[in-house]
Structures are given as C-alpha cells and as structure tokens.
Length: 361
Ligand code: CP3
Image 1: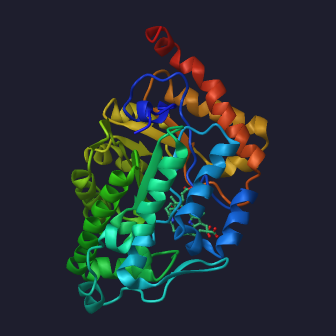
Image 2: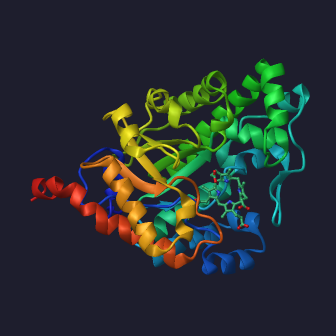
Image 3: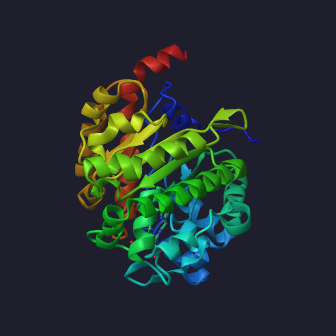
C-alpha cells in the first residue's frame, strides 16, 4: 500500500502533534461545485452517480483538485443500506430522498435481512477501491454510514420528516419492534463499514443526523446503544494503522461524555456547542471535529476568517482538533468562500501547534 503523503487527519484524530489543524467539509463533493453538477448530469441522476464507481471517484476527487483539503470522503449516501434492503430509494428533484416501500408494520420489519455488503452493495466497495487507487496516498479516505436511528427515521417515514411522527410513534408504542429494526440496521452497518475498511477506507464517520431529535432517555436507548454496538463491532486496525471512528450526532452536544464512553476516537460537533467547553468536558479521551456554522459560508471571506479564528482560539493549543463545518456545506455556497474557509484554517492554526514543530525538529 502507498505511503500517506498527508497524514494530518489521522494524526489529529489520534491526538498526535500536527503542523496545522487538518480540515475537511461534510458534503465537500456536492452541488455547490459546478464540476459536480456536470458529472451528475453525465451520470443521469444522483443514484446513477453513486452506482458508478468511476464517476463516484471523479466527484470524490473534485474538491481536492480545488482546495488543499486534508481528507477525502467517499461519495455515496447513507440511504444505500435501506435501498439494499429492498425499500426502493429514489430522489424526486427538489424534494430529497424517498422510499417506494417504507417500513411500517411488524411484517415489514420481520421481512428485513441484514445487508451483506459484498452481495448487496458491491458498487460502494468498488468505489472505495477505485478512490484509494486514484488518491495515490495524497490524503486519507473517509468511509461512512448513517446511524441505525437516523436510517430508521427515513425507512419508517418514507423520506425526510419534520417531526418524525410515524417513527416516534413506533418507538413509543412498539419499542421492541423498533429495537428489532435498529438491531438489524446495526448489524448491517457493522458489516458495511468493515467492508469499506477492508476495501481501503482509512477513517470512519457515523452520521447520526437525527439523534438530536430524541429525548435524553430515548437518545440513550434508541440511538447511543446502537452507536456503541457499532463501535464495538468495527475493525479498528487495518494495513498496520489505526482506523479512527468519528461519531457525529447532530444536536448531541449535551451527550458528549456518553458518546466518548462508546470508545469512539473522535466526536463531531455541530455549531451549537462551544468547542473549547466541549474539550474541557471530554478531556483527552477523544479528538473533536467541527464546528463552524455552515451558513457562515454565505458571509464575506473576512467574516469567515474571523469565525475560523474564534473557533481555533476556543479549542486552544495542542492537537486533537479536526476542523470541519457543523453540518454539510449547502448547494448555494460560493466555491470561493469555501476556499477562503479552508485557507483560513491552515493559515491561522499554525500558531496553536508551535510546540509540535519544535518537538519534530
Ligand atoms: O460528504 C460528502 O461529500 C460525501 C457524500 C455524502 C452525501 N450524502 C452525498 C449527497 C454523504 C456523507 C451523505 C450523507 C447523508 N445522506 C446524510 C447524513 C449527513 C447529513 O447531511 O446529515 C443524510 C441525512 C443523507 C440523506 C440524503 N441524501 C438527503 C436528505 C439528501 C437530499 C439533500 C438535498 O439537499 O437535496 C441526499 C442527497 C445527496 N447526498 C446529495 C449529495 C451530494 C444531493 C443530491 C444531488 O446531487 O442532487
């Protein structure tokens, strides 16, 4: 396997010294980039893009051609697992994801099998292999999955939802049925992520996008428990290197200590948590990733730079910080502003890593 030319992301996730704070952006390959829109056009639609390893590789690399990012993230979607379970994923332009066959009844849930990634999702594993080859060791490749709870919300609601009415009704009225679904999903996620790791993913992120919609007690029981099951089931070392796991619960700022208890290597923060306070709470147990409000990218580049400076100052000196947005970059952002953001992170963070420079000679 090729040597990594830029291992800042892996070092920061392991809380080892770095020269500058590494940065990547959730949804860094996406509609704000004209070159992404052009490739998606060639693929026909979004699922055509996910299903074609060469085109998925092309869009994964596009943001790296433009910006000095410290990580690449597999181009795919969290909803590939429910699609592989036979729910029939499709995207209605402008409406987000939808399922032809949502999961609503006991019979629906009994009919679901644990996904076998080699048989059911070969196009994702092929994309991982292709991207690793084409990256040539430039930066690490991040693989990902949705959390069981987040996947369950889409599967039950049949798409996006404002209040998760149907999913929460099942959770409160038929908790044993919800647990059965979440366990099937957790087993699927473990196999899927281990498949991505064997295919070459060097970092794993779990997106618990809707964990923050749960009550304190329900978060523990219906989301965190399955994040724990996944962290315990993942391959943690591959190709002679640690494979760090990042847990991102959007709206999960109040549960960071409990998330750290899972044994994850890093926690993703949205922008509602102060990263310096978060660091004091979790100590040196985990690295932290985040957490600029993605809508700041609509502001002027000098305002973006000031926000980056504030977040770096809040985190403070020393390793263990991966800069990111608090959620995905949105389609209307000016690519120049994304560039200003990434440049600011590298330029302004060196001063927080001075001692590491001396130590490395
Ligand atoms: O970050 C990356 O660059 C990797 C690719 C990636 C996508 N989706 C591509 C995508 C990742 C990591 C995801 C994860 C994902 N997908 C999540 C969790 C992260 C989050 O945002 O909270 C969720 C909830 C989904 C489900 C999903 N997929 C939704 C709600 C949508 C519609 C969003 C919209 O703005 O229309 C998608 C589609 C999707 N996934 C797009 C991209 C680039 C846009 C599709 C297009 O090209 O039209």
